[in-house]
View 1 (tube, rainbow, N blue to C red):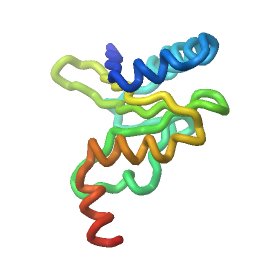
View 2: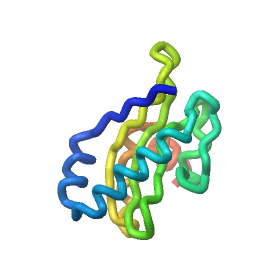
View 3: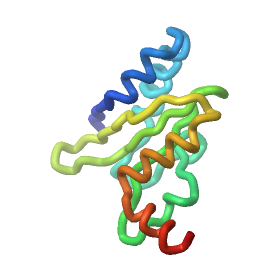
View 4: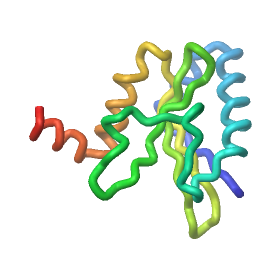
Length: 125
């Protein structure tokens, strides 16, 4: 399966702020897991990619936003989608953040990608 990695400006900025050892760990992790995850199957290994519960059940949308553990200290925020037209998996790397900042950064990304999450929290909150 072909795979393509797209990088946001925010991810690029985050990456530049990290030490070389952390950048290398991210590249190795993406290379390793990128070759083992087939987005077309619809199944994602939860030991490495995860979704907080508030995003896992959107009405008619199958969310493709995930967190990815990179060692003990880092988390990536990314989307993993299958493009059937080009028969490839597309990984969009959104942010690379310390574990302590993950929840806030993930929620910000989720709000931008899935505005219906904000609508639901306004109605129920």
